[in-house]
Image 1 (tube, rainbow, N blue to C red):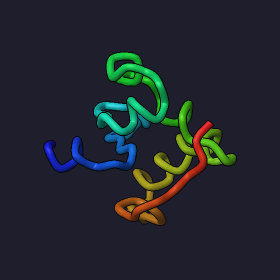
Image 2 (cartoon, helix red, strand yellow):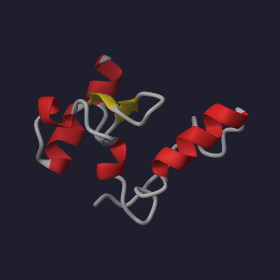
Image 3 (cartoon, rainbow, N blue to C red):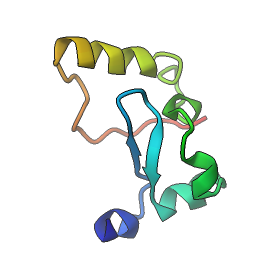
Image 4 (cartoon, rainbow, N blue to C red):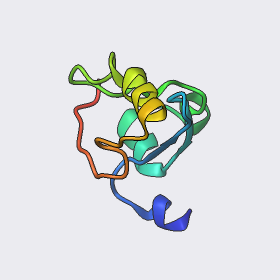
Length: 80
């Protein structure tokens, strides 16, 4: 986790339901919430640009089909 923590970019680890399980220091600094406040939140509360409202469906589609359209790829999204 030291590599994740050293990143200057906000990074999140989410569950198969979109629940935030890990955040790095850059995410804490960028969004102004504490780690404990973000842990347990749905990532859709952070994802902006129209993706937030659809994010849970993106995850469900991946779990159903196994087809990863963006999973494992670096993405830059506008936050709320």
